[in-house]
Amino acid sequence: MPEPTLAEANSKKVAAGICGILLGSFGVHKFILGYQTEGLIMLLATILTCGLAAAVFGVIGLVEGIIYLTQTDADFLNNYLLTKRGWF
Image 1 (spheres, rainbow, N blue to C red):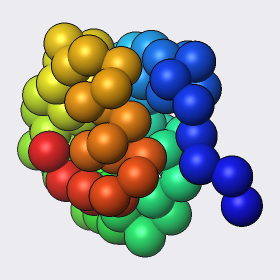
Image 2: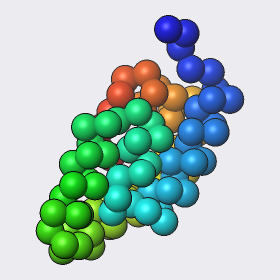
Image 3: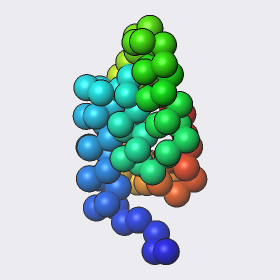
């Protein structure tokens, strides 16, 4: 499988950053980056607690979204697409 390019990193960075800020409690930004396990943890915890965990995961999504959007494309590519850092 070919390695992602900087252009792909930029498009995923923007999509994951915006979804992290707006839909962070559902883990949508994790699914965009290909992190199914982390995304399922966030989604199921939000659903199974009837939304009680949504506040916590919403803050996590907000912070991660801001982190994604403030990184350079090269840093984002290295941290989240090549080395697969799942959290923060």
